[in-house]
Image (tube, rainbow, N blue to C red; front, top):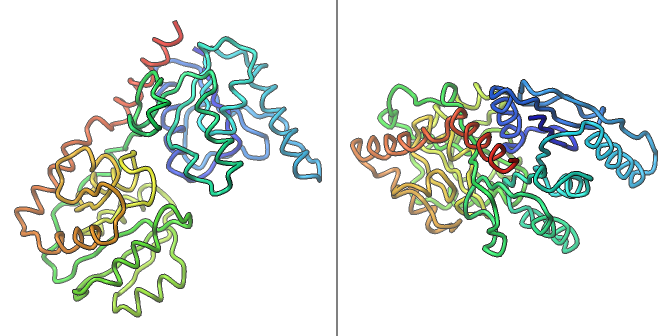
Length: 349
């Protein structure tokens, strides 16, 4: 099949990685897969074997006119390509795909987040929310991602994990006199980085704890941790190999957030694969019987889970880590790609 994925640009978010990897897996099944993108946003951060097809970008000095023209040109390029399947992956591209003059059975919406939660503005909430009513075949990355009124999805395709990169450290290191706790810091408020730091600062027993934070750390939060008595290390991550190494350098990973409880979460999955003790309110941990999983973000519960980690004996730690690793086989990219391929083939008959 000729499959196109219109995007407004490429970035570093986990969802971007998923699209690049899925496109590569579909190419491996013999499909002709292309990302369609404005010609001023053409370099994917995450490598993919899919083609990059460009639409003309506008140079209009008026921002709103430039955006409208870019959107229109992207829409026209999608029509020109005459695809067998079009996959939207974002609320703005969902509208674009819905407006294409092709049959509905060719139109898909791969939903990786309930994007209504990303906005405070009521207008943007409405714009995002209405996309779930569009005549598109919905594919979710987690079965409970959307409200029940939108349960007309055709299948679930979770994000995958590259288990050749994210693999366990040789042994659990909670024996060296120090305990390292890792966080993937994020600027977005709903990621909860500052809230996690508040919980760490409120711990009664801080002795021997090292805090490692990757990607993003506000200076005010760094100073709070230092004032609380922690040794703080910051790691700017530039590749998956560096990210995997970061996970393996930690004994405990805190992978919690303020929204979308139970949804797939890359820091959760990857740190599980790397052999850390993981505290999270996200999948895959929430799909296990872990004593460290949280129903939702709760400062008190998070503090209790951290203290529990610090007090587990060696056998309990090993059991928890091995249990985490054992559930990750279904997230191998080959299996994820096969699931997505089957859904597209079945729905496009």
